[in-house]
Image (cartoon, rainbow, N blue to C red; front, side, top):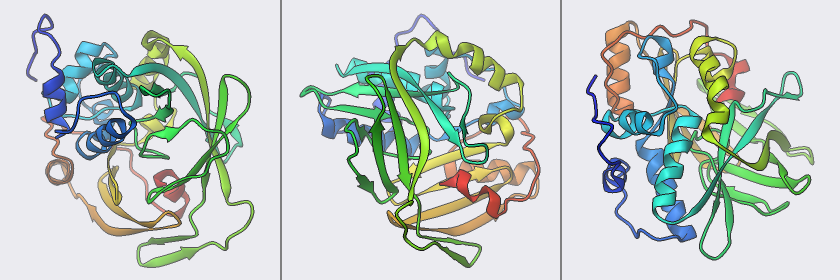
Length: 302
């Protein structure tokens, strides 16, 4: 693995080249939107190193080395910590905060300090939640109580609980196509599904370190239960889950479909899928968990 001299300054222009961004460098909501779209398109959410790769750290310099120099992606803390640095270089006001995912099966929130989110303030005072993992939403989410925010990827709204906490809800899809079968759900008043709780209390990166270390060594959460690599686009996303790549298309905010499924039979084919779909090159074998991807896992793709 190439080693970067840690004494060398991190380069904002190199970061912008990595995500193929050539727009204005200014603290504006439109700039934030475009930066996020470029980041999603070129830097995937991925946890491949947990399944055979080198041990990673949450040190900002190390994250820069991995994502910018090695052309890799990362898990949510890595992606958000690095993107926060970029935004601060452009003079956005940025706070690292935590969010807890609502577990539909148990009807409880997962453990604290496992997931991070960015609270970004633009020059006119507009505030947005940003999460570079791509799960649940793929755009800057305006911090406005009970406003329905719609993109092709879905419709969301925030519900303010008190001065520090918001609940995030997503409108469930009415039509979903998978493996040639169409799953439809009638429209009801209960279409809004609780997915996250976001606490806007400012956090420091080191506060996520203990859970990050646990993720690296254990198999006890979504982040490390299987190999995941996800590249988000405006019109859909491409996802590696285990040994299989799924491509999903957003038809509209209520309808989505899986348009292709490709499964690798061995390590060489898996590495080729990573290269062709995500532009990721790895020099080690990965050991994904093995189970069938069935209807019960569809929710984890949404």
